Image (cartoon, rainbow, N blue to C red; front, side, top):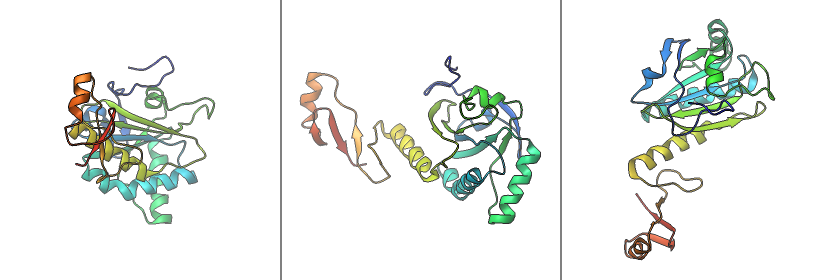
Length: 212
């Protein structure tokens, strides 16, 4: 399930968990049939994390419209999470609609490789994991403690992965819905010749695009 370095692997089952959160008990099985964005932050009541949680909260309905749930985590208690959520509501006028995991024992953080001793011994770095409806880990993104994540990019990445799954294609750099997509390259000489008549926008034998 994990590599010797403690990192889970893309396209393998995500590490299982059963945890207490600000919304009650949650397990990975609860999210079967939906996408899940699991994201960690170094600590409650920190300014960069506050901006990220506000960003996730403002995009929560957009994620939900894409059959995706959000789940936060830090190595803090439920009481700390609840107090921080109340602080964000009072100071910024934003309610946090998604659960936050109580991971005081660092069990989930260790299983997902969120603890990087070079950054801090007992804090989770800014890690983000995309888990698909079948429970497979599909993407993971790590940020340094000093810099906040782009929630818009996570929306874009989810849109791209869902489009690839639905259409068996790849997406180019910076792809957004409505842009052309990349067709898988042919794998035999005969397929290369056939590709010329398949109606795609063809730059070279290995590079063809189409609109959806």
